[in-house]
Amino acid sequence: MYVLVEIKGKQYRAEPGSVLKVDRIPEEKGAAVEWNSVLLVGKEGETSVGTPYVPGVTLKTRVEDHGRDKKIIGFKYKKRKNYRKRWGHRQPYTLLKVEEIAGV
Image 1 (cartoon, rainbow, N blue to C red):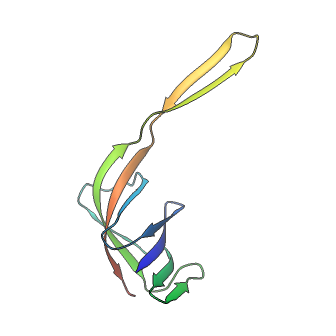
Image 2: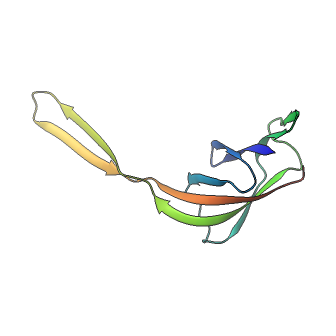
Image 3: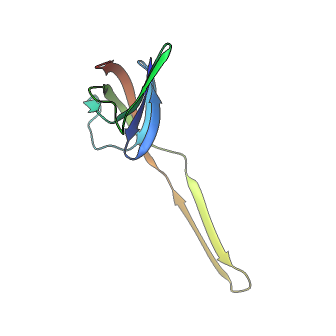
């Protein structure tokens, strides 16, 4: 069984026991978090799609860790004008361990 869940404006496919890498959420490490925004539930042989969410279905997760991704380098320049600008960005993330899909 799997679900499609919306977390902070992005969609993730989750199964019990899987780990999701999502944008940073303001929860402590080890905290339990429930998500009600389940868009789709897939079981063997049948699929139920929400309008926009499937009623009564909840994804229960636990915060495993927080971190930052590898650095992404941005660069822009203007030709013949001696203008160059370079910057880096490290996106913060949270790892969520899927414990249970409740209400199915």
